[in-house]
Amino acid sequence: MTNGSSKWIEAAVDQIASLPGIGRKTALRLALDLLRRSNDDVDRFSQAISGMKAHVKFCKQCHNISDNEVCGICANPARDASTLCIVADIRDVLALEGTSQFSGKYHVLGGLISPMDGIGPSDLTVDALVERCSAGEIQEIIFAFNATLEGETTAFFISKKLQPFNMKLTSIARGVAVGAELEYTDEITLGRSLVQRVPYGKN
Image (cartoon, rainbow, N blue to C red; front, side, top):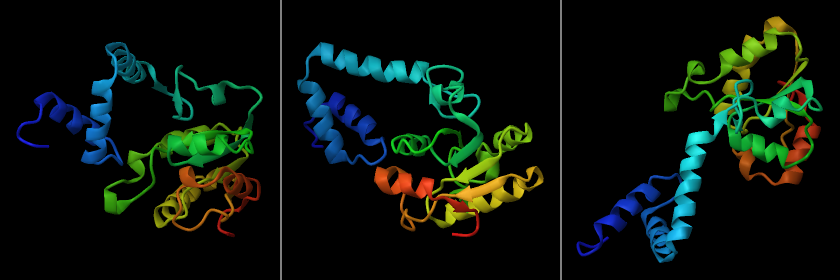
């Protein structure tokens, strides 16, 4: 930005550039696009963002996003409550649901154990997961993590925490390349890796 630019555009660019994956050039292009739009368009845009922030909740059972206290997946009686797929992020739920290959329920950890990033088990929803498993309804746990060191570390830690419950532990097959992120994996590969899951520690 130059010294002669608008302070209002500068402020808008600063906020847009604070979003992940958006640099200042992209932020400037988006800000200028919004500037060219009608007041009604911009009002709808800002109301949608404000409404999302005000009304979207986290499911009290699985920690997925929801408009209600319990998300649609957890509330659906047709879903298999005996099979629980553990994922790191809400985006992973969206990716797996896009495959139409899973009929069970989910648990969103909110990240992966990563000492380098200062993320430990207490920063995740591991305790809530253990509490869910202690109820005795869940028979199989599926680890659906990125094929990274953090994913392996998290799966190992959780497997130790769940040992007392004597449940079947599986993980998605490695059709997903090592180092790849689930949200960027194509639906066919991701669906196949879910259907062809293997006992945890065997892949």
